[in-house]
Image (cartoon, rainbow, N blue to C red; front, side, top):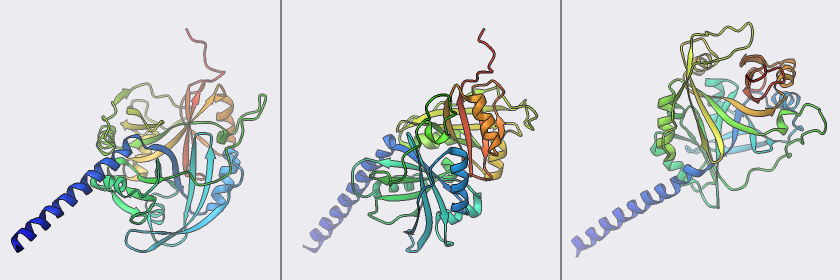
Length: 337
């Protein structure tokens, strides 16, 4: 009887393991269609950062909340959080209060910059299986607790950032500013986000890892040899780019590798010691000329895109921890032939 009992126990253990693995695969597959809903920017002083975001992007001043958040090892990462909502996307500002958790670690290693990308999962319940799916692909669980509705998993080595998986509705906050009537220049906060961009050490490696992690075909990598820069730039015109563009839950993602340098991407990869989330792309319609001028007046450094072009980078790393890519058309563009 003892032998039969042992066999039954062994079968039950194996069956339970198979059921858990099946649950991980089933819920982990949620990652394939999960909505890319937000980014988190880690800042050293949230009050100072809020003033800069209000001035540059036109947000209303948001409320700041302080939370003690659990880490997997039982400690508490105390942070200050503010939510900034755009029409189709939102941003979190995260300031670490104590020396515990991924926000403090990111600030020490990367400085003020994008600390995570947020994925919204539908329905209710925990995110344990989705989090475990990330861990199975080499991620390190850094924030949240078992059975919780959110978790942070560090995938910097393969995907260039930490991902947050969160179940349920977005946290409340001020609605996005309205586009002003007439010909007034719209604030950036009133416009749609098109994609989140990465400066990649190796675009092919990053996209292959993304495909494997999210259960999708690896995005195609293309070469781009028509890099365009503003006047008096310091970049190498002989360098070219390997880039890929794809969608995650309806939001665009982009990875750009610089072959040669210096360029805005090679410089960012060097500063962040590898691939890292770099920019937020915003569609400004036919207001490129005015928007570039306005953002330069607010302290932005124009680092990419030519006068009259269809795209431009404005670098606010020092004040916002963020680079904007503007997409649109310029009234000063030469007429099409």
